[in-house]
Image (cartoon, rainbow, N blue to C red; front, side):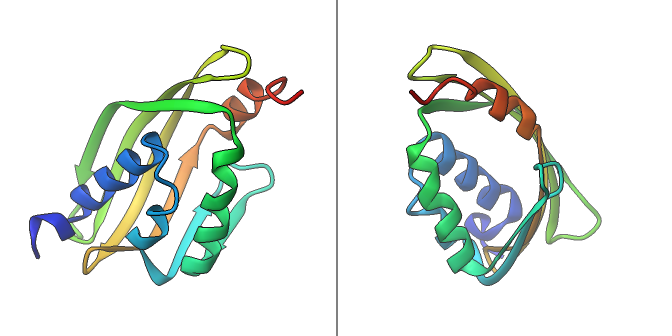
Length: 136
């Protein structure tokens, strides 16, 4: 496996794409039949396939936020396809100036350089609180 196809490198491209607001590129990091779950979303969500991810990422540019990733720690597991990544998105709502921090843990399976499965444990309530008065 090339270094670019390694799970750690794919994860880094994912968070770089999110924080760089390159949302149109992000679905290409996923396999055609990828499954991504957000167990802590209310209600929990499940995105299936690259098309589902494309639709998901297409909604994100509407959000008035700027973010960066901090405190990134990637744990490799006994399974060479699986990593556990801990990090926080630190950001600001551009319409209100409100600062926010959203802790995350992603459990990702990467095969042949593409994400095939991910369980994204994000603090969705922190996003919702930060964006509560962001839209006029």
